[in-house]
Amino acid sequence: MPGNSISEGGFHDLSTPEIFQEFNLQEALDGLKQSDKIIESGLPVSIYYIRGENVTSTGSASRWIIGLSERNNRSFFVYDESGPSFIPWRAGLPTKEIILNKILMPEKVFSQHNSEIVKFEDLSTGKIPELELSNDVYVISTQSGGKITNLKIDAYTGKIL
Image (cartoon, rainbow, N blue to C red; front, side, top):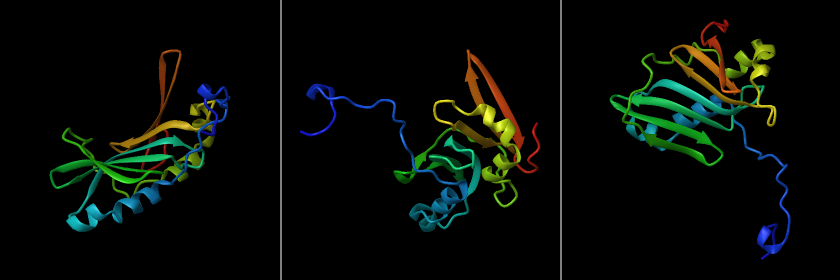
């Protein structure tokens, strides 16, 4: 069997970073709107939580996780290179609904605060590991030496908190 496996005595380059397809938040939101589950239910959807993983300096991410509620049914919508999927969620979500047409999209926040946000990049990947939005606030976190540091940005004004 061809390939680079240890059992064959070959080598595998571990220094090559994984390459993920990246999406901006609007692409994920469009995927949510176009999903069969949302179209078929016809129910209004409220969004309470947004999380981006492996976020680039332009605000795109390899995965978006969106916490939503349709009446009393809560779930997470996941949008990544594997395609869209839903995960049922029985526990609670943050209390404040995210008003999508009023928040600043991540690319705008990143362009406004690039000099601050770059400090949170993972040095090995050049990306922000996680970006979360809940209760009107974007939170970017980093951990170093057991200490967690957060950058909090108002999702509506873009002001650093």
